[in-house]
Amino acid sequence: MISIVVVFLIVVNSTIPAWAVLGQSRESVRSDAQALKGTQTTTEMSGYSVEQIDRNDGVVLKEFVSPEGKVFGISWKGPTMPNLSSLLGPYFPAFRQAHQSSTHRRGPLSVHTGSLVVETGGHMRAFRVRAYLADHLPSGVSEDVVQ
Image (cartoon, rainbow, N blue to C red; front, side, top):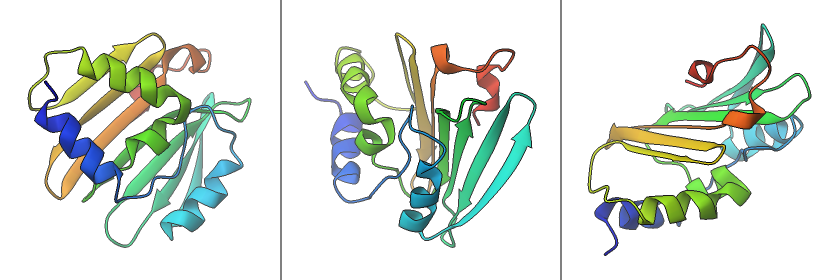
């Protein structure tokens, strides 16, 4: 049986574009900012950088980039859910399969499969998503930075 959350995610994902994809290069951020029609800022941290895109409607997309220039984590906060299939790219089938095999019914969703970690939560007009690749975290950087 397909849970209400999966149906909701499919409906939302079919109408809202997404931008960043885990594992892509830093260069993808510029196209993400253009697609979101948002303002991009970069913050250099110890061992990684954060590319943040802010949109007028309250959407904030953060892409966490390793020193090698690869996106190892993404966080989304805003009034709409992002398109998870685009956000997760080639990792989406593993996410979907793990979610469908769980008994999750409602509330926050947490999927940990292989290297991929996806956590969603929130409520109408206040959604949040955090996704990262555990084996792509830069040396000395904790998964806690992806917020």
